[in-house]
Amino acid sequence: MSNTTWRVRSAYFTSVVSITLVLLMIGITSLLIINAHKLSDYAKSNIGFTVFLKENVRPIEIDRLEKTLSIAKYSKSAKFVSKEEASSKLINELGEDFIELMGYNPLPNSIEILLKPEYTQEDSINSIRREILKNKSVDEFFYQKSLVLAINENVKKLSLIGIIFTILFLFISVALINNTVRLSIFSKRFLIQTAQLVGASDKFIRKPFVIKSIISGILSASFASLAVTGIVLILKSDFKNIITVEGIWQIVSITFIFGITITGISGSRAVSQFLKTDSDKLQLEE
Image 1: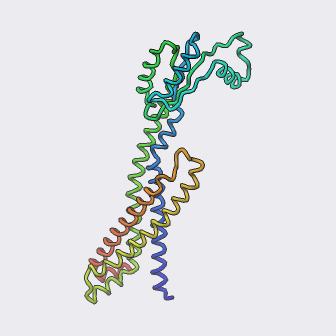
Image 2 (image 1 turned 30 degrees about the vertical axis):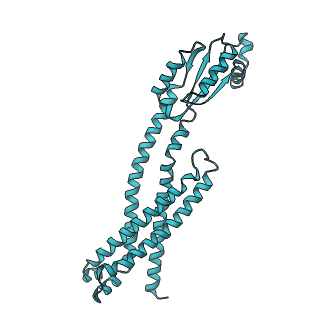
Image 3 (image 1 turned 180 degrees about the vertical axis):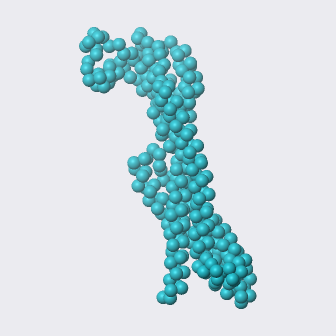
């Protein structure tokens, strides 16, 4: 194998590896974007409130209220917690029996409700609070306001950071793939010059380079898609509520479309640039 052939193949291999790495990052970014809603929902999954009941509420009324709250449009789940369960849990947390010290159980019966993600904003919770306090069985409504504000604020910040990062990364990815394809074609610039000298048209010269660039994009997208699929399969067992295989075809499609489009355009532009470059300049670039 001649040095020239080795250099050409080495440049092609390097090009495919470089584009694969860039497309892999695009695939991972797509994975995060597709699952961003699930990530947001997961962050809000523990937001809820507690309804404390009055002392004289009958069991049948408690059962009716629990069922009403469990099927409410804002409710993900509703669970009745008796005063005995609440005191047992508190004793375990404190490490001492406060009932023995006080002589009675001061904790009321309650119902714990987890909210659906779309109802975790403070204004929605306040609206729910006003509605629930109208019930005669309800004594008090409690939720951790600071936790709700912190989670919603952090979700907004992460969403904004994610959008900015995605836009910047797309620009960087396009630039990296464009430079990689250009460098790959650069190694064959004298072949382009020779084809021009024998009278080949620009379209005839450009076509094989564009096709080869697109093939590089397809190969790179294939490798990147396999890698992303592997990452999803590895992570889904630990993050089954966040990462699923449902969106894998979307990620693969995005990776292939991006890889083929950018390599094709970059290949065409690079060849056009060398077609317009004087032979003297090509000699200087060697």
